[in-house]
Structures are given as structure tokens and as C-alpha cells.
Length: 321
Ligand SMILES: Cc1cc2nc3c(=O)[nH]c(=O)nc-3n(C[C@H](O)[C@H](O)[C@H](O)COP(=O)(O)OP(=O)(O)OC[C@H]3O[C@@H](n4cnc5c(N)ncnc54)[C@H](O)[C@@H]3O)c2cc1C
Image (cartoon, rainbow, N blue to C red):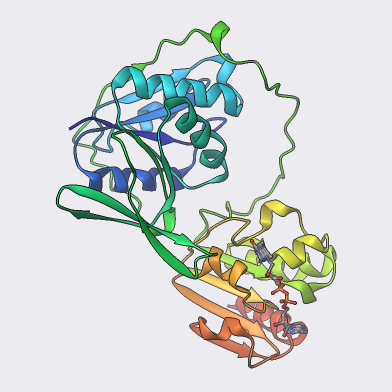
């Protein structure tokens, strides 16, 4: 069986743990799999990946790959897949993989299935279950041909266990930096400095909606509750569009997909496009003054009342322990 190639995501030396969930899908597909990581100064990251049962950790390490420019990354990913004869190229659904893998699929002339939730095998043929219509329906799809590119929903596949007893080799991929595409130029990076955990990796996420009104109120109530619980902050598109927070906080169909242990929605109606990004959370708490708000239909616990009264009380009682 041909090897599967799993794209692992890192950002300036920080491993994105959610990208490891694609390994679980690789294991379910069967056969050998190799892990591929791109960037610069990757020794530490490579060393942290050797115990995940892969046949090899392949490292494309070059100053030309220090920033994730999609045209360069896709070229290298496709080249590694071709050279290794990998028939399945796989990553975790994320902003990063959305940027890189469709381009790699085009370079490989391979079909792509995104947001895979599960696989089904019948008579030796594999089909993939994936959400459509903002998660309100599931489709089961097949692809033609041998080579395929997939992304796995991290919330549908557990983080893989590492086994310190088995260690695979690290192989450097020799690339010719001068021949990489130059259509994109890295100009600058704006990074939000925050002590809060990453939204897609946090165990607790507090999300705020339209009635939070402005940045200051949003920060004191949503941010305050998140800080009291050691969690991350998220928002609905209504809150983003109103300028309360930047769009990297958005949770939902056109934002981030999250599945924390605990999700708290404050002043959020529960539109289908928002639910598409958080409905796999383990415990869902909704705070809304409208008892008929749709979010209560999926909430584990609901608090009906005015958020301006309830949230300060919650923050206060958590802080007092
Ligand atoms: C193509 C498309 C993609 C989209 N993608 C996304 C997406 O990725 N993420 C997303 O979130 N949305 C997305 N949307 C928008 C989505 O349809 C909703 O408009 C949005 O989620 C609503 O946000 P909200 O719940 O904050 O606001 P509203 O729907 O206005 O709800 C506010 C809620 O707050 C309650 N409330 C008001 N005041 C108080 C108070 N004082 N105390 C307690 N409760 C109060 C109200 O009862 C209400 O239920 C998308 C829409 C489209 C068309």
C-alpha cells in the first residue's frame, strides 16, 4: 500500500497540536505514513514528531520557507508527495491547510475532499463523510483515481497517542530554493500578543455575540470570564462585523472550527453558521435573555437572563472560588 503523507503545521517553531489529529485519520486509512513539516530551524519540531508511529519525519527546512507563503509551500508539498510516491496527502482542516493543500492538489492533479469527519470502507473502496450546508447535512463522497488530497476535521479525530518506545528517522528533503515560485512576497506579520490560549486548541472557550456592543464591554465580560476560567475568547460574525474584535476570533462556518471541553456562549442566538463552528464542543453553556433562542436547543446548560447581570456575577463567584 502506498504511503500517506501527513502535513504537520508549525508556526515559528511552535507545533500546532491540532495538526496532529490528521495522523489519526492516516492510521485509520491503514498502511505506512510519513509526517512532513516545512519551515526554517525545524530541529526541535522534528525531534518532537518522531514518536507518532510514522515511517519518517520529512523536514523541508530552508530560509526560503521561514514564512508560510502558499505558492512555495504547495510546490514543496507536491514535490515531496511525488518523490515519495505518496498517494494520499493529508492535513488537518485549518486556515493553513486551506491555503496550501488545494494548491498542492492542483499541482498533483488530484481530487480533494475537505473536512473529512469519518471514512467508510466497502468492497475495498473508501468513501468520506463530510459536512455540507454549514454542517446541517452530511454528504458521503468518493473520489476517482488513485491519488487524493484530504483534510480532516480536528474535532472528528482524536489527538494521536505518541509512543516514546518507537522512534522514526528524520529525513531532510533537499530542495532547490532558487527554483521555488516567487509570485508571493512576505511583507510583514502582525501578531496579537495574548496570554490566552489559542482558540482552536483551548479546553475552554468563551464566545460573545452582538449584544456585547463595543470592544471594551466585550473584553471586560467575555475576556473577563475567559480569563477567570483560563480559556480563550471567540466571537460571532455579528460581533466581528460590529468591530468589537478582529476576525481571527470568529467561530463558525466562515471562521474557526472549535470543539473545546467547555464552550460558553454569551448573547449568541445560535445561528446555523455559528453552530457549524462549535456544535462538537463537549459541554455547551448558553447565556441568553430569550428562552426561545435556538442555541438552547444544543446547550447542555442554559442560563436565561440578562448577560449584563449574569456574567459579572459569574466572574465574581469564579474568582472568589
Ligand atoms: C454565508 C454566511 C456565513 C456566516 N458565517 C458565520 C460564522 O462563521 N460565524 C458566525 O457566528 N456567524 C456567521 N454568519 C452570521 C450568522 O448568520 C448570524 O448572523 C450570527 O451568528 C449572529 O450572531 P449573534 O448570535 O451574535 O447575533 P444575534 O443573532 O443578533 O443574536 C444575539 C442574541 O443575543 C441575545 N441578547 C440580546 N441582548 C441580550 C442581553 N442583554 N442578555 C442576554 N442575551 C441577550 C438575543 O436574545 C439574541 O439571541 C454567517 C452568515 C452567512 C450568511
